[in-house]
Length: 390
Image (cartoon, rainbow, N blue to C red; front, side, top):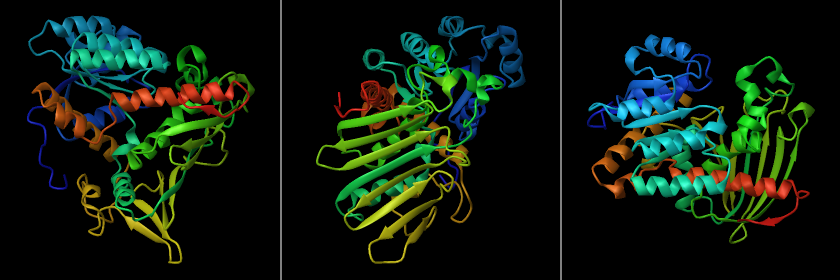
């Protein structure tokens, strides 16, 4: 990657639903998708207001005739074109993800969806079955998973550098919503409204990010039971939580904790994953994504740096510049998007093995994120009790 060779034979013809003017995440989707010439934005239904969406699409140099008033019209019109879209990214409020993803799959499109994929496991499993039936990919934008030091952590754990794994401590606890900022901020308001956000706030919106990172690092771990407690410290957000604690017991006796919060006053981001073994521990913090803390019992603490030759080979594959130069979230998303494109290209030529082996969050990650939130809510809403994981 550091030499910049193109990995996709031809850019995937691509559209967006949502992500228009004022979107918090629309720009990073577009920047990541086009950075390696892996996707070409040719159409979109960018806004719930058709005129505003068309104006925005034109500003992106999308053909005005392909700036559609809604996703249904877009899918129907593009299906009639010989150069129609092959994939779509969904960057809309949570409550729309299921319907748009289902419609896209039925239209024969690959899907890249914001998390959560949907609100219930039943819906998620329906999407998984439909994706299998249509032979299409569903990818989920767990955007932090493209950081190279996540792959370094996975390799270190796999190769026994930490010894026997005992504990996994996770958190995503920022302070930006420590007051009712949603009263003046529409892009935050929907996140604390059950009609649009679904049955949870920080569990679905924040906690699933470090949870997925832990699944990348420790793919063999399976949750056997958990206990969850959730709170609404800004009372107007009830019944949605703005703070939650989860304890997990994995098969084999490994223990895990996860703290998710939007009211950790003073914290910028506070997303960390710490894996503790019998010999050593590692810790990754998304505010310092180019570093991985490595602490061996009885030895001085080490800070491993992105781009250095002492890292495992898989941690160097996606480097875009030499060590010492900081890479950030846009690079992480770009690493995922070019891999999304490779997987789609492979699936389109019938190479299911390659599409399945690429290290990206696919439909299974989306399903498990929804399943985890459902289990957390079941525990919390029954008095923060231990429950068997279903």
